[in-house]
Image (tube, rainbow, N blue to C red; front, side, top):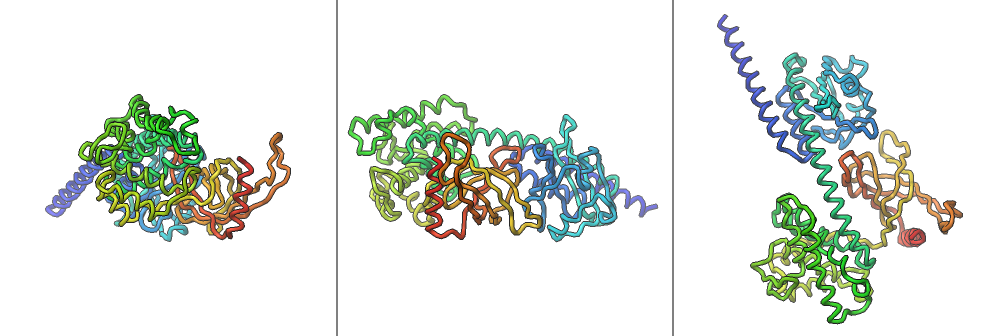
Length: 489
């Protein structure tokens, strides 16, 4: 009797501890806005609270009617996808009900392919649908291999409670991410559109942003500060929209009057950005973006600020902007400088024009090392086929280029391909594209090999931009490909 009483107290204490942990987890989930960190937080806590060996989350992709996972523990691959009506997770989605499987390999719904991909051995499974307030399935929360025995009714209650909280948190995070991506894509597009007015400076704002982010990270900027720096860099020349073409596009040295006209772009940048709504933590963007030409000694413009009046972000942009202008290879009115020559120019303005400590970081940490394109990149939408030669299933997939050069391409994809993934691409290019019809008169087939070197989620519903760098092409082959691409302009 005494032992039973003690056992009951222990069991009650454990139950209270789990409920307390569940409340703490619920609070943490509501605070986390980053979707990847959120998914990691959910599976880590699900594993602990229910006493399992591991957990996974499968999110619903309504565009492709698939379930996919990007987060898991141990040896899980970056992403696994399968039809939303397949397997135990698919059953939970289809019927919107919890599934408790005591022996996975005895259940015909279990798909052992995931175990083969990950090297894992699944014994038992507890799966709960993640339903939002409209009773729509957001995803599936799954815990695997109960450490002691099989999953019981108490585990079922816990995972249903956790899945309900996870569904709300995931939807909130996806909505926040969608808003963030919408703002980011809009601001970046604005900056690119201004750069595009002058083909000789195309890509300038993006490169300035990358130099600036490198410096900001080295200084320990937090995520909000880095975001503000990134957007300020992307928009720092937006005021050039008001500069007349006769000045902006002039291939020769500007007259004093023309230079004064050009300098007014900094004021216009602030005027334009002041008319945009920015969240409270980003409200310094108009000021930072418009002060990238200020100098420590007060000789800059438009406000003639001195060192103690300049933000650290403005000092960063001042270095990044000048450095990129000096090493740019495509400006007709000057020859590109080497890195050493550009640093020498910046050094002449050490502590009078540019912050010496930031210059030292820029040089010593080699923060100037970003990709600078050797071949012209063309904004062309060219359909092509590709496959992953090392994948278990190497069927050909279809995509379309966002842009392409002789060294690589950017493509849209519904599927995430991890960095380093090798792809074979099959592209047909017309040698002399027809200008008056849609019929290609003659063409050339290209079989290209590449690796994924960039992956960026552009919109919340799992659309990725994948950057692929070609390899194996000789220099003559690259020159030939670049010449053929140029005919599409």
